[in-house]
Image 1 (cartoon, rainbow, N blue to C red):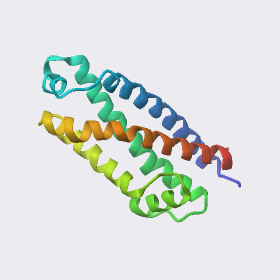
Image 2 (cartoon, one colour; image 1 turned 45 degrees about the horizontal axis):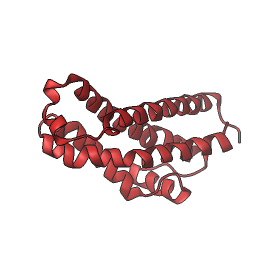
Image 3 (spheres, rainbow, N blue to C red; image 1 turned 180 degrees about the vertical axis):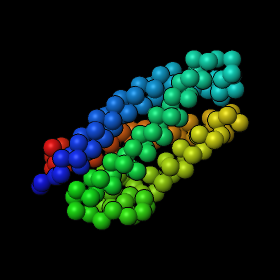
Amino acid sequence: MTIPPKTLARVEFLARVVRKECRHLITTDERLFDAGFTLEQIETLEETPDVAERVEAFVGRFGRLQDTLGDKLLPILLSLLGEKVSFVIDNLDRAERLGFIESTNDWMAMRSLRNQMVHEYVEDANILHDAPLLSGHSFVPLLTVSADKMLDEIERRIM
């Protein structure tokens, strides 16, 4: 497969970014959740800047990795594989069919969750704790496995 140099450079750049984003998300996820994360910690975020920074880092890194994978890496990977690139939902359906993601529905739930985390965590500690943060934590393995599958495909076929 012959890939134009500019496209190859973009794929190599995105692969490096995704690897780094995965490492950072996993580290932040461990620092935030390994010792248990409680509603009380969320309710006192303003008084505990260290925890607040971890929450902020988790929310940002979760969203950034998902955006990089779904909006940047996946379309270019599909294109290089000769697949039609279309709307996000169609790209995700192709990614599911190709085995890059477990489920389009799960991915869309993660997108919704990301939006909820970004907007809710400032306002309501109960909502942040009960839904977005704990759900986001549970989605981290799914997100990083999807990243690994896409990166493996790139290495196997393109690089």
